Length: 90
Image 1: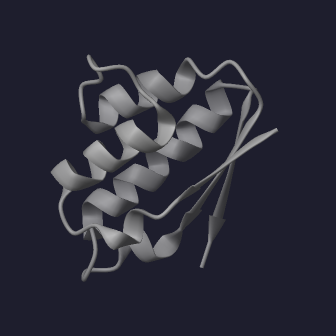
Image 2: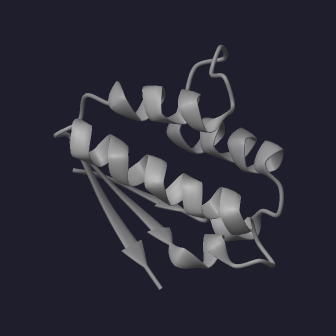
């Protein structure tokens, strides 16, 4: 199983975070760099993958509300793609 640790709490704006996610996951150049595109890309993952992400991403010093939506996208993608497992840590 592939394991990916998302260190999203290092970012304070969505643009930098999306660049990081594209590099981290190896998404193609046409990746849309928004939450809808993230969901679509995660839905296409075809190998068993565990994604680990911290709730710190939702802290106001980090991404705040965008971080909350990010976690929702990861959880929704995991529900719809049997190859994904998401572990949210504190």
